[in-house]
Image 1 (cartoon, rainbow, N blue to C red):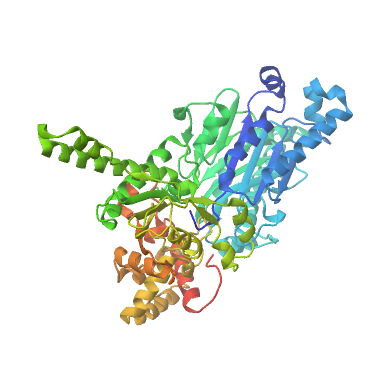
Image 2 (cartoon, rainbow, N blue to C red):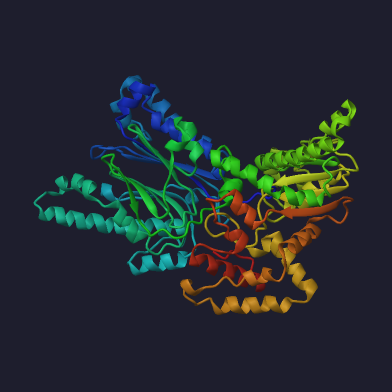
Length: 632
């Protein structure tokens, strides 16, 4: 994605089902869980580079012994930073006490971070926040072991105001109006309530306070706590949590917006945001890893018992399609095939754009994450040429000469690596996006790879804002002097904000919105814009279930092709010599390529929760009133 956008986070949960001594004997180290968590977090580095956190819980510790540990970082390399801190603590402890090296019981007692229950998280900063206070996991502490709560998640809630108000009605005084805080405090409230009721009940049965503690851990109904806490949540989420006594859970939203996968054997239970992470780190087969059902939670009791509980009634499945296009690692078996298919399905439009002239066309991709869809595109180009070759050979029949045959067979798609990204420069200049001259040098080009009579076809994952295209990529590609530059998006036009995890909040940031606005101005239909604004205003106090996405009307006056053409005009620098055409994937082909992930609200405006419609209308109000602020 040439326009970097910040997006949802990555979550990892590990529950070791055997004593630590077991892993020491079998794998040579009692730090087996910590090592696996490091690998899981690194394998999900693609999901977040601004912050990382790790928390652990030791089971069956004595009073006065530390049983919870947490470390977080918002440094430039946060995963490396937190595990350096962990390793330093471990190495220092063993250096100072050499007897610890082979004494697993003492290691567990004396060295932090070594436990049976581990929670890891990587994140991108949202709302412009990237301080250590915003980094997961979050910790809610209490002297009662059962009331200690550690939470980390891949989520965004659309109704934070409502959730904040609910907490106030419950008598709480939240320290911040943020979805992470409100969600944790909501779970914490019902956890406190459940523990208090169990304690009262157990006392009636004749047990003393000390005897009550293990019974509370045994009887606590985590699923019931989650049902009460999540009742009014509106958003996309994969929410993980650890309880101080050793229970754990991971809850997925009812529409399955955010991804969650799990694996279980007799040694370990693992949950992660991506399937190949578990595959690689634990060396297990694809079909041994399962997807957590929408609206369900995997609950792991302190005893090691695992259950799958329906927490919220599942709605129509709307798993995020951006996961398949861009966010998730392309090493996933299904995602790899889907991305290739995205490239294949957009090829007919490419063929039209180059007037069927493959001989005088060069194919490439920007950025590297678009390579898989590029493979699908090129393979379809090869299929097209094979059909043409067959027609030509059959037409010549037995009279074909060796020279003619070789001339036909030698034609193949021309593939070049025309652009090389300078990663270090990119990191530097994002600190000041106003330095246009530096932006123009984000990429270097391969001179001599394109001839003046050539079309240059470049495929991208998606075109969101188009800023990098206009300020850098198109100017750079124009130096190769192609006849025409065709920029292909393997995703459809992004028209609407995402409010479930991706940091796309303002309508006016999207080049599709800017292009449609320009079309309204050209056609003299600005009155429609005002009418949409008034409709959005009239719904501000409407209940969520009745809110309609009126912003759809903004785009309805024009076809997708008309908007794409205008995008091409907007993004073409005035001083370049090449003709520029922008091609987008169709919604229909997206669904064909990614049939299990039909969440497409950023393309279609079909939000899976009522809060989404409220957010998009608020975004339009902000645009119309000239307010440079987020809609959620």
